[in-house]
Image: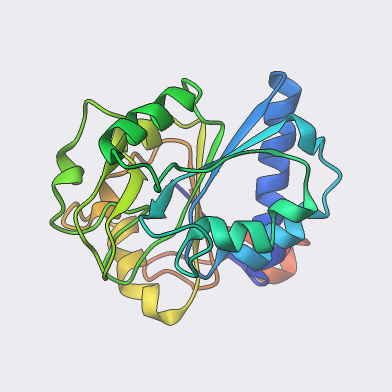
Length: 233
């Protein structure tokens, strides 16, 4: 797992995502990007939208979604539709959380996914959850499906990618900002499997954070021109 401490999280994270998308598009005809919600990614995505990428060759998927009506403020899709999606001509693949049969809808969404997503963006909750893989939920044990429906968490059930789908990604990019995440970040980097986030594969993973993780030496900033500085490999 590579850890990048960014003086400017928005610029640093957007730069990493841009390069990953360019690499994917150089390697194959279409690139796939799966996005989580939370509060951190929106300014990053708006900055990324200004990059000169062939957006028409990019498919955007959802990592997870709350099971609430269309247009609800708690929907990740609502935020995507207000910020990122109007700025880029991507092909969007919303999770079908309004379907009457949620398990069938989850299976249908799984069939839309490529065999391996190029880039998955993950966030990190203070309780150590990521995607909608939350402490104590039976979905943590699912290994035979790429998409599943959770129990209730903070007032809503959710549809989420499962560990197998996440672990197959070519690259996982974690965006972790704010002191409230410090303990969870330390546990993630320590591989503490008592939190759901640490059960995600560390292969081809990049953690971009605005904090200096405990136990990780940060190089002298004068030696680096980029606002994103590699803190550890």
